Image (tube, rainbow, N blue to C red; front, side):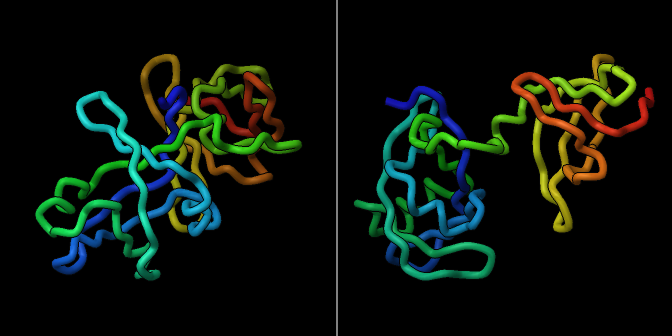
Length: 165
């Protein structure tokens, strides 16, 4: 069914009495989320496929209708659930990489010092941030900006960043 799940969005609160629900997209641009089918949700370690229809754009996302959900009480069971697709449904890129491909990569500075590995990518409103877990367990952020990111290879991200414990 789903081999390599990746998160592409999240359901928010319900909207109205007909079972509509807010959707927050993690794709860029945000409306690309509607190009992927099927979507999957995870319940108790099991992935289930769902279909949805766009009702209208809303603040910071969309209002959607989930197939066979026409009641607010049923829609409430989707609140805060993540939406996944299978990694194999993404087109292969000739150049560049997908953000989720950076997670797990080792981070080394220009002096060859191992800074840790990427455990998350976050956005602070101004830029994307790599959350790095150091070998000693401490965590820190590196902005994903050209001035700091020197090179990205299959296994490593080389950065211009001072080593600090």
